[in-house]
Structure formats: C-alpha cells, structure tokens
View 1 (cartoon, rainbow, N blue to C red):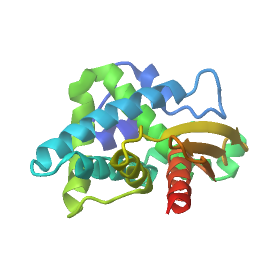
View 2: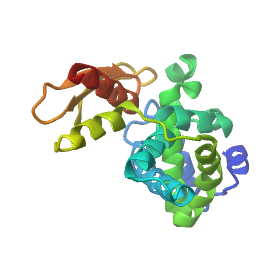
View 3: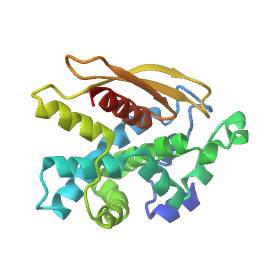
View 4: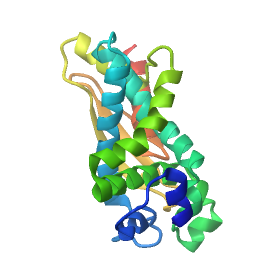
Length: 217
C-alpha cells in the first residue's frame, strides 16, 4: 500500500479506507470495495464532466456526453489502473490470484473506482480532483473529435423521436468472482428490448445498446 500511495501521489490519513478499496469480494464479500466502487463511480463522473466542460467550450451536450462516456468506460479505467500499478496492491483470494485476478480488467476497473471513492472520503473533493485531473485531462486532450458509443447513439435515437431515455436493467450476474458475466437488458419505450452479456456491467450495457440499435435499424 505504501508503494501505491507513492505512485499516485496521495497518502491516506485513514489507511483503513485504502485497505478497503483494495479488498476484492473474493476475500470478504461483506467488507469489500464494492460500496466504495459505487461512490467512486459518481465522483469520477462529476469531475470528468467538469474537465471536458471546461476543455471544450464550443461543444454541445451530445458531443460532451460522447466524450464523457469514452473517458469513464471500462477500457479507460483499466488502462489507468495498470499505469499506476493498482493490480500489484489488490488484496484478492487465493483462487483469484491463480486465475490472474490482479490483472483482470473488471477487477482493475472496480478497484480504481473504489480507490477514487476512498480518496474522496479521506481528503475530500480537492484530493479526488488532484488524482483525477492530470490523468483524465491528458486523455481528454488526446481525442480530437468526440467519439460516439452505442449507448449515446441509442439515446440520441430515442430523443430524436421524442421518446424517454433508454432504460438499462441488470437481468443476471453469474460466474465466479474472477470471471463474472453480467446480463443487461435495455428497453426503449414502444420497442422490443434487447439483452447482452459481458464481463462488466458497462460492457454489457454497451453491447445491449448496440444489439438494440441493430434491431431498430
């Protein structure tokens, strides 16, 4: 944990928060990083929204939304988690270690969000911004045009027709902790829903949105 704190440039006052952020559900389901992951997801989303709002003053809501989706997607989180060596510090169960759990994309994504949540609780919004801004600002500047993902495209399709935003629902979650599989169903009012499976909820949502767009087309 000391080496990780040095790498990220933040030292916790409450080391228990960092320990919790690094604890995978395979070690202790009740005392794992899942609650911190929930919090960190929202903190990250808010700060990234403010970064791109300031960085691209000429862009409208749809373009900003596409940039935001790309910057908080699982692949981006996994990339940053690997850059800071987060996997080396993860506390995972023995079976998870054998299955390569410390480099599992879903585990890294969840742990990074949990780490952000822990930093926020320990040092407030200022500390969270100090961790997030230099890393996500660099990524935000590297994308010349706003990318369009399936979820954004589906939302734009619905809104263009005066329909409510698509509704995403978790249908099932199966598999061991080191290799989970999530089933997500997406519905647009008045149309048959579509489902998709993936190793993370974000990926499953994107896949479901893509499947429904194909049906609608």
